[in-house]
Image (cartoon, rainbow, N blue to C red; front, side, top):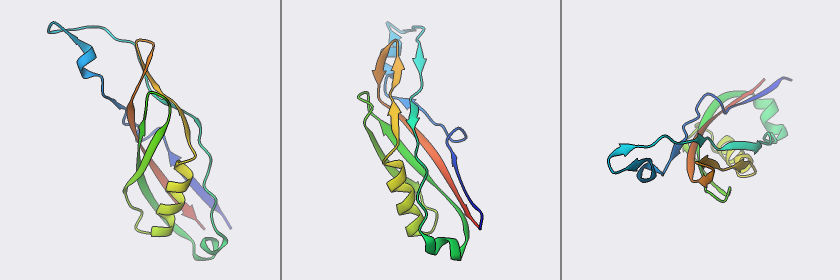
Length: 121
């Protein structure tokens, strides 16, 4: 049996910081040094044996909020259509660890979307 799980981490990166007020100074935009949040640990999901028998191909999308402390909040924003798959994805993503985004050398809060593809044959 072939199991392929793709975490399309690089495909749906949407990093949005909440620092717009810091970018403007007297109506003139300053140059900034911004570094996106980076996953330093991204464990793969554990697939229950019953899912091997069924086989499936689906995907879901999750949204991370990565605080300046590095702590995260994650939720599924687009379901796979399979509650069990969504739960597996969410439990797995809750174990991911991020280095926070940096703006001018200081950690800042950011958001990131991740698309998770499940293909179990």
